[in-house]
Length: 567
Image 1 (cartoon, rainbow, N blue to C red):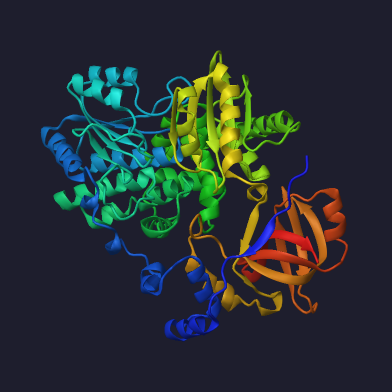
Image 2: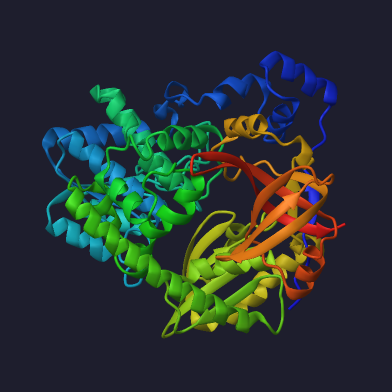
């Protein structure tokens, strides 16, 4: 199957005089000024961008429902009522559950937690779990990363004498009943200035609000930010505004300053001891391990790990998560190979794949794989008798949430946002859903939307690279959606040599003059024909990100290759 080659697009072209003036004023290189402007950081925000501060977080009581939520929780603490934290099974939900559990325990509240089984119970509140909570004399349920659309379940809880405080960040399909306690920046009438919080971010705002009313120690509250950073990065929300502050401050706690025995154990078992923990380590090493048990078995294992004070227990649990992650990797590889065979006959606007043997906890990864490889919206389903349970992932020009709203008559339940969603529907409706989604996509999208764009910030020849410039780029971190790594274009470089490494290639690349030489890594796929042209000693253009690599106490510049093209 042919895949369209990517287009290289310059992000923006800025007025050189303005960049030079800002460079002199802020004592930064003109290149860094361009990078800041490319990320839509206005000059009045430069200081807060460079030095994110806990003091600059928004007032939590600006969020609709916060006053009612704090009042009800403080009443519960005063009465010494049993409280149940009800979370979701992904990393965002697990970190939010752990955060609220630790916070409530620090307030001397008898708090417990519950995360439903992905396969047998599904996402969010369910009536059987609520009835079980009632038998345990639970008086208050606090949700995290779920609950916005659970109107019937909340009504049941209240009929049994329990109150429910919902903390969530998913889109609100219909306004909830006026007397429900919902903290969600997307709720109708909520004037909170930052709408892109993750589930754990919303949970932290609740803790921040309660802390203000109880004189909770400020430094203790800040110690939870490592959990907030991990959940925020794992949920792939924009790293702008408060999210960037949460991640920047939270990563400062990792690894040496974290108070979590569980995180220290996970870092050790994952082979990260002694290494700096950055976005890549969280996104590709720690998060998948925290996610694995929620995908394949019980997410409570991850909460146990993150909440334990015993290093011995933490190491046992971390090893368990490591084994689960290895099993998840094997399943994912097999399922992605099977998905390739399903779509190999015809590439549609929206890719839909399903199999009765697929594990429901891994279908989201299959959808992500297809979306990334083919740059198309993708949905993957597991089949249980006559029910299809699936996950959707999308591209920027196609809101999968809005598309599913138009197909709601075919769907039993769904939830999510523009780029990702989860859904359940009768198996008999799957073909109709595929037909309807492709019809919607055909009206909205054109062939160019399926050609992946690779943006670069500026043209920067390798001869201009030096350690001072690469060091300066660290000011922009942490990187992620909304604050991407800077990517540069270098023309007519040469691949002096190359070798295969695990899932990629290592190069020695020289600049156009042949005077400067750099080690480079690429994890892009090259077919046989591309390899012949790229590795034939002819000049090539590259998109790259430069980083400082330390090996045996020697510091060198290493290039992460984002794409290569023949000249």
